[in-house]
Length: 408
Image 1 (cartoon, helix red, strand yellow):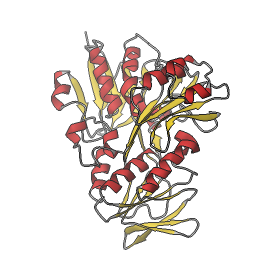
Image 2 (cartoon, one colour):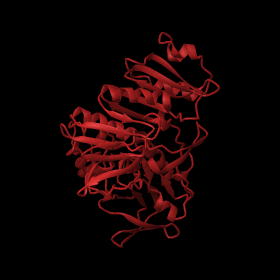
Image 3 (cartoon, one colour):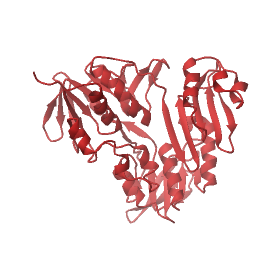
Image 4 (cartoon, one colour):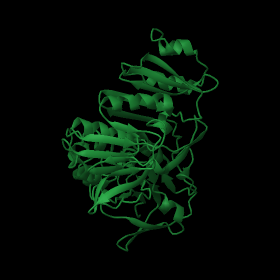
């Protein structure tokens, strides 16, 4: 009998973990991974952390060596892209003109850097950061005395800023919202990150917009803002978010919105296709809403659930969204989902100024919808329990560090 073929489109963390999960769950058929990059799958968070800090090399965060894929009979096709998906015939067409027929398909196509139409963005010295090659090229320019202008104060922009300052690079950040990380954390905690970066010498300009990247002789020289002010720089990083790579799914007629729509088992509108990671707009059985987040934890954890669905053993994915960051002396973990307009107030436990605290986002019924521990560790289980309980909490007790979170 012919062995079933399970195809994985993508070459990042989610794709690698899905291949692992299929073998861990005793799938003995053919697994083909189609990866667009020239590198074996690697972790992306180190790109703006350990790698830019000069503490890690690609081999340190490559997920599995080449031999692992050989030992587990994973057919990895690097530098290869899927140009079309024919669901009726269960066929993928590749960019070399060949085709691959599958029995089950996983879409792990990830996301790409958004590229707003800023005049001058095609100049030498303008960067986007998504891949190892991007980070490698940018790293060469973060030298002592160099000048870096960053468009956007999201996670990537702030993490790069922190590493650049540690290397003696002058940094300016231009952000359209009133605080950094406004969409992720709201103004209350966004201000904490603003104060931290300003204290480290970053020229942070909020409520500001970029009119153009200034250019001289084909090279970027900085930014011109809408208010007429300028920022001088040798290098410009545009870090205004990511766009999910949903075109393949959309063109094949799968249900898409901001991402590829999947159920709680990560199955798309086609029962033979799952989607994981950045592109998965999944129904969350605990939050009772659709959730699509571009977090490392989704790419790490969703594949085990997707593999079960591919093997006919569906199991809902119910983990709370999770992410973390390291900037200067600030390390934090965030669990849950609180967006501006989705919470009523923020309660702080601990010392905000000393950067040793826990923040809790509460809804109008005083239920915890998210929590963030800053330089205080081993609390994620307690925070998760508070969120999953859905119970009303006493704000005063929540803020009191002498009261255990389990007793709030």
